[in-house]
Image (cartoon, rainbow, N blue to C red; front, side, top):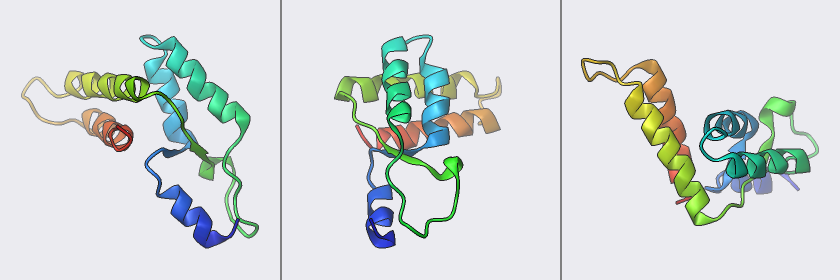
Length: 111
């Protein structure tokens, strides 16, 4: 795979970085252990092959996530609940709420 193909693949809605998937596993496991297990299996299968001259270690790994639509929706719902739960009592967005909103947006692109 060349750099151009890799960049194009990285733009796909269902391609996520290692850190996003790992955090999602931690967050969804209590409510949706089967989804967390599926995400863990995706990581264990290995990342998308990187171009020959690609710089970066595991932190730059990308994974194609294939789940059922309802599973993607469940992930989005979990992040939505967390976003709302972390808004301040004055109704202001906190950094934690903003972080969960960012993750919600990433996963929403697939749904």
